[in-house]
Picture 1 (cartoon, helix red, strand yellow):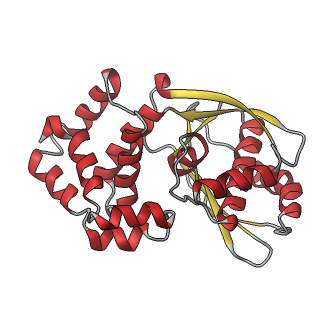
Picture 2 (spheres, rainbow, N blue to C red):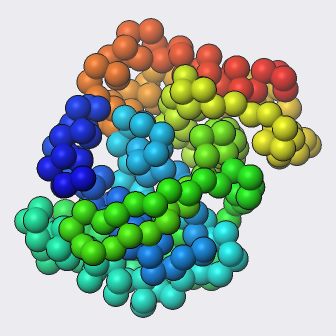
Length: 262
């Protein structure tokens, strides 16, 4: 599929043309990374939702978890990204790209990609904090848009993503209403927590989160916070429907996923 065709599809889902262009670039970056570091990483987070779960919430984070336990070499990662993204960046009039290393500590790599005018495009974030069940990993073969590359991209499944979002919603130091939106969206698309995924969530909650603490967290998903965090991240039509009902559907989704512990 050409760059123009991908952008057209994304705009049809509600993304602006500029954001659609960035998402295509993120997809290209994921292919480059998996081509260079096969069997090392799995794609998680917001980019997974946009690329593989049809989410309309914009994300500028390309997040990975090292399933092999080994972190990629930062210098090589930066080199292959800048080199591999050049053809697509030229098509988008973003060349030359700039790539800044924000963090390269043990267990965490964070890079920031920006355009030729200094505008931030997206981050590449690899962290060993957290876990992914092997049964929750899926794989698809993707071809690059503007380079002769092909890679098997590994990403967490819809159900595994729901588990991760449920855990993240409770564990973040600073609550993010985007986690609540993602839970609602994943449930609407048929995601569920059963078997090992449910047991994993229960183990995380045990001794840490009682019913009152979970309810208190859910009630923090209030209209003021949702307006501040979601208005710029969702298509207008989607956002307006949520705002009209004071974002109750987000809280309802959280109550549904945690109902057994309330």
